[in-house]
Amino acid sequence: MLSNVAAASEALKTLVAAPISVMEVCGTHTVSIFRTGLRSLLPQSLRLVSGPGCPVCVTDQGEIDCALSLLETGAIVAAYGDMFRVPGKSGSLASKRSAGFDARLVTSASDVLAIAENEPRNEVVFLAVGFETTAPATAALVLEASERNIANLSILSFHKRTPPALKALSADPALAISGFLLPGHVCVILGHEPFRFLAEQHGIPAVIAGFDPEQIMLGLVAIALQKKQGEATLRSVYGQAVRPEGNTKARELMESVFISKDASWRGLGILPDSGLVLREEFTRFDAEKRFGLSRLPGESPAGCRCGEVLTGRITPTECPLFRTACTPVSPVGPCMVSGEGTCGAYFRYHRTNGGKQ
Ligand code: SF4
Image (cartoon, rainbow, N blue to C red; front, side):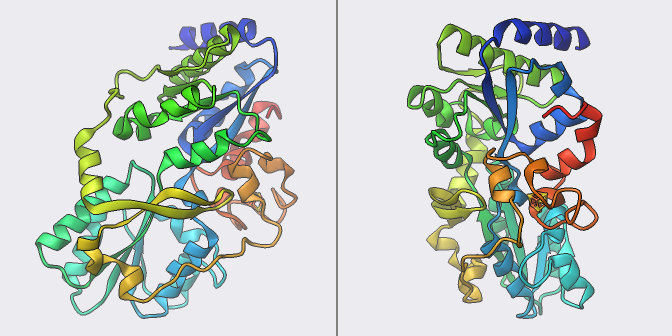
């Protein structure tokens, strides 16, 4: 693998003469690139910018506040790890739990089912966050709860769809993205088709890649080659995991439970058809309806520039709070909280990459 990475590094130095900006869409790519020191192997002319591929980070501030408000009803709110520390207007799930509210950490959707079954007198709400990679598991949870007639379980769905976010980014001339390194795990589910528009409509090369250094470097070479040859197509260097048609069963499962709806993203605003909400037949599991909640526009923490970080407009070091008021121990914004957050990755690894951005 090392020799392939070194060869790709040499190839990039030859291929990228004029400056290009490549967006690595996914937080897993961002962290892998930093952790393995790949930035030091890239030519100066190739700029990597991080995109909106961390599900915790793109969850809108109003959605965070909506989830926190649920605790006030006395419901048990179950959520995955990183969501626990994201600050909202009145604290975080973690601080609320310390204050006596019932927020529970879960590692899988089936944990939520167990809580609901073991505590039938309590309302249990699952805070469902994530892209097309986690939405099928939420869909399976809803179907199982429906089959087993579990009456005290509901879902607060903040699931988001990846293609509409990339559509918004590729249509923004200010960002001038030269190529997209596409998230391999989302493409395992969606396949190639939903991302073809990047090349066909916007003329931007897009390459599906996995997450180890070799995959990332191969993906970057495939983008650089297209730029040099004046081409724009959708390519994949991750054929061992991603089938062109994706995972049909997972998609059918997701589509049997959810429909798409406009959703608000941190940094991108409201994007058409970019969220997933429960279908009419599953309304009884919809926490927003059950508790009469509304997603009001939320205000980001004062001074936090996560929205600009998530869209590649600035790097974390350009946020005045980075490493001062905002650290992993005391995070101000979600990009510092999440294990896939760009600010957290910069905090942990930036110095070890010779300061190269
Ligand atoms: S450093 Fe902190 S406050 Fe600044 S953008 Fe990142 S998460 Fe937000």
